[in-house]
Amino acid sequence: MPRIDIVTIFPGLFEAFLEESLLGAARREGRVVVEVHDLRDFATGRHRAVDDAPYGGGPGMLMKPEPLVAAIESLAGPKGPERLARVLLLSPQGERLQQAKLAKLAETEYIVLVCGRYEGVDQRAVELAVDEEVSIGDYVLSGGEVPAMAIVEGLVRLIPGVLGNPESARTESFQGGMLEAPQFTRPAEFRGLGVPEVLLSGDHGAVERWRIEQARTHTRQRRPDLAAETTEPGTVRQSKRKES
Ligand code: ADE
Image (cartoon, rainbow, N blue to C red; front, side, top):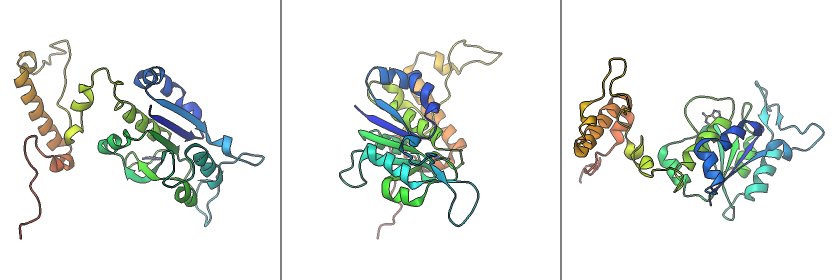
């Protein structure tokens, strides 16, 4: 069964997150283990400090290396080929998360998510104990807790059996590099707005063609970066290299 451990100085933030919704059900059904660890339990000294001022000056505080490395090593073991888990540090400095990366991570049996806080983390802790840094986007949050939740949620729905209908994971946005077509439910008319006729037609082929066309149009308009990368279904991407 996949296992995810989370290291944080705010374990309370995860309480409701772990109990509710798909994730709560998946845990209760024994499809995934998610545990939260308080970084302060690994701090030593009278004040159990987990942060300190940066060498060289500058605003704010940094996460101290000792408790972080102790926490990570107690869970995953020392960094190296024998290590039990893949250790990710959530940080705006990391590689930006995409669906393809989530799909790859979903194949990993044991992941440790380390939530950065303050102005950052002592670089030696990163070097000694972290396998990779991951960012959830080009914006700065106050810590890695919300990004860790994003990763857990993105991963758990990829575990077989977690989604009621496995079709959902295959047809949604970014699957195949495209956004989804717009969707509608009842009523058929709402505040003067109707539903595209084709969706009421019962013609599954026509619905499928309409959805693909809409997905293409939306992707081109909203995410031209994605559209440029997308290989249209049934076509082979042309090699950019000229024949010599
Ligand atoms: N911590 C603060 N901002 C973050 C981001 N965008 N991604 C991951 N961790 C973060």
